Length: 168
Image (cartoon, rainbow, N blue to C red):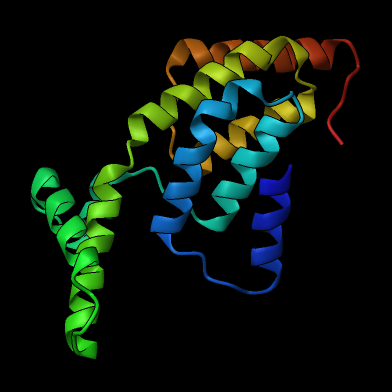
């Protein structure tokens, strides 16, 4: 839950969190997603969504001016190493190139798969509120779960409604 507190603190302080930073955070969280509890996974994904993490890689690459993902990764590495001793305009250009490399290093599809697998494994333990937050977070992150996953989550929510487990 330290991640949740960090992201909420950044939001409340009005900080604009860079996309590359959010992606690095998501990369670090990815192996731990399956270990999160039923209340934690929806919260973490919700906070990432609120902070502005985008999983639409095509859009991110277009914004960064990336044409070829492999070229951008190499360019990003070399630009980041060459920042010392350059003018402000050169640094700005090289930082944009380095950011483009960071965008390409983040695999939205593997993060998506890890999120959906973690959500599915926790599904029997999720409350209706947690399941609805999970759905909202997936939508905001543009995860686009498969129909079978959505059906399973909706069945879980329906079971909660039938048992009078109403969302808060």
